[in-house]
Image (cartoon, one colour):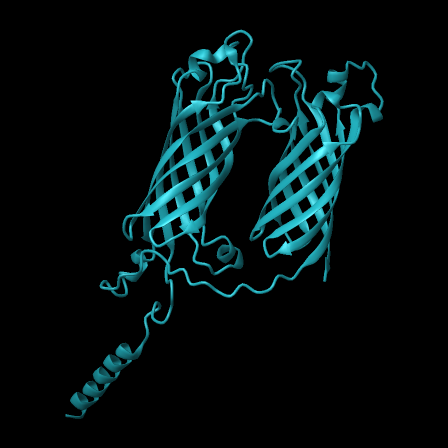
Length: 389
């Protein structure tokens, strides 16, 4: 009798404990992993830059992209400021009317999609993506002479667009917008006029919470929310700061005077910048650039150039937009030196930065000439001296 009574007490105690024990998701908002799978398709035209490729560039193009994304919940301050963006990885493939001269470009890239304005079900968004592309048929003076726009098999891929999206239900979003695609190699090989595409895009997004595969083993009846609740947090006052930085970069460049089999000339850049942090994720400033470019002797037709013949300087304005430790760099500039008139008067530096520590960063950027024409790619390191107000 005593054994039965003891068994009864243990059973009641375990049952009572099981009822009182909280599940991992109880009392938690936005529990899980909010993910997306997207399919994008576009149809459009070339921004024509070659008369030798009329058969391709006078006809439309189409493309298809598959993406895997993370829907942010606003846990980080930058997510709050950007309106809870989606970010992740994508896979891209383009189809041209005649693929023989150019190939069928494909790309692997990172993207961010954030709202300009969001209503209940409808939103207008901006999107940026950058990555590496492949699948090209590069210029060859014998086998592929008509391709005078791309001289390399692998290139940089850049994408930007504005899109209107509508929430059909908790699972599905559909969108319509206009986008731009760019392929080039930063003059690491010539020719490098690049390929530019503009088109109308359609997209379908499927939203899901990947935590379901874990919670079903604990409670098969629990249904995690599919989308997170966007709960605004009070954005604190910006702690402004002043910043000085030193940046050094190097790279290689081919010239337009020798296609495909020409030499790769060494280039380098040394920059000094001042930035003022005027908002949590944004800085504005200015700086000076000192460039060394061995390729100048090819353009200037100098047999025995001095060091000063191969160097030039510039002044630039600067804006930096941070996504946590990643940042987007935009620096329009003007040349101060007189020995680079073939580049015209203006240039830009556009690229990405990653803060390894609060003071040390690595950076990859495209330096242009004559506005948006690729000049060379910089691979650089930098150090910041921070002075807080």
